[in-house]
Length: 280
Ligand SMILES: [Zn+2]
Image 1 (cartoon, rainbow, N blue to C red):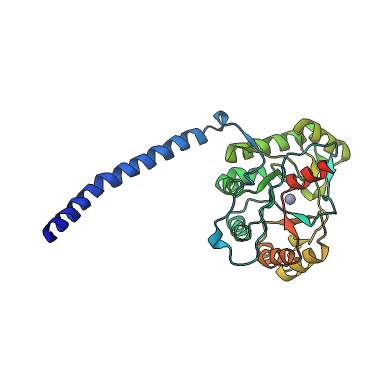
Image 2 (cartoon, rainbow, N blue to C red):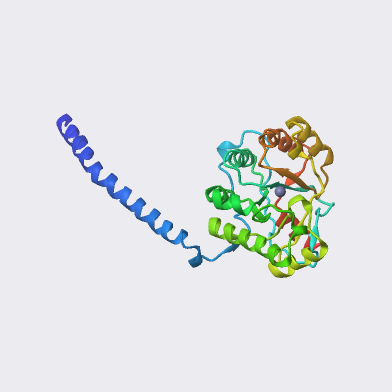
């Protein structure tokens, strides 16, 4: 009996080798298949928006947690510019501009994930081309991507064709990186003439998204100031502006999110905010 067991074990060990390698092979072929199709996004249907159904694993949930927001993300409407949502529900949209950043954005994504918060990232196209894997992670974890131009120039100084090129190059970079199409845009420095907003809306279907809460975090006033400015400014339907380019902004976020959650605010994406607005 004992001898048999040993034999079984040793034969099991021997058997385990080919089994393991064949498993590896299967896994490898899966990855290869996926890799082949994902490297040619032209074959993939391009989705609008992000995977908002993503739910983080329950084990990371130790503190305050945003509820699952099963809201529509499809919006229509005539409005070319939005700077807030409806005021009759405690929804806020957190927006982060100028990324992705190789260290700060992943750190922010971890903070968002533990709280089940979905945000909207207005990414710069040139950064998308540098860090496409971070854009893929943003989308995979249920956040939304918006267009923040390719070179972050002041758009009011550009011709119409230069403006279109800024939008197009960025949209193409986002589709290449993550196979999603941005739904909205935010102009760098908030600078975009009315006629330019109409052009971007008709040519790209992007509404221009401004904001209603600005902590001026890019001036680096320190994490506690960023946190208190956001808390003081928060209101139903707020679109909150911040930048995942700056480490102190990321430092401010755990406390900021927990403050807002404990005040009863719920976080949704910009598209969800617009969809609710469209239904009203
Ligand atoms: Zn910016």
